[in-house]
Image 1: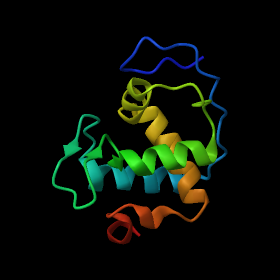
Image 2: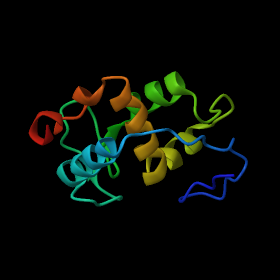
Image 3: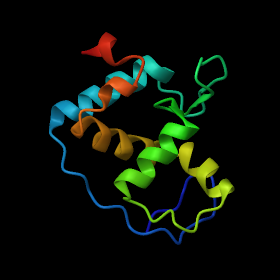
Image 4: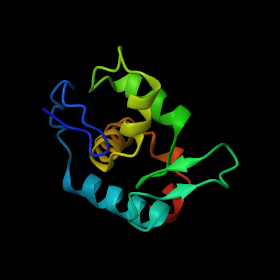
Length: 116
């Protein structure tokens, strides 16, 4: 079971391993360096589209949309506080990034063209 790093929630479904080629891990590390300088508590309040949060600088809307799309955690009964805790979780952000990159959605990050 996964316990979110910022909460006491331990009732989430186990997160499946996402098969990823090594280059994807390198791309994610480059994205992290560019987006947040590796700071898991990074908060960009100046993003033109709303606040960007965490190690991979997800906007709340994008994070929720993609979490529901890929459904690697059951979010059906989540309250707003669960979403807020999850968006700050670096492990969840990285797993979601792997899925998005595999689905050709890397362009959703502002740094994508800088690291490619």
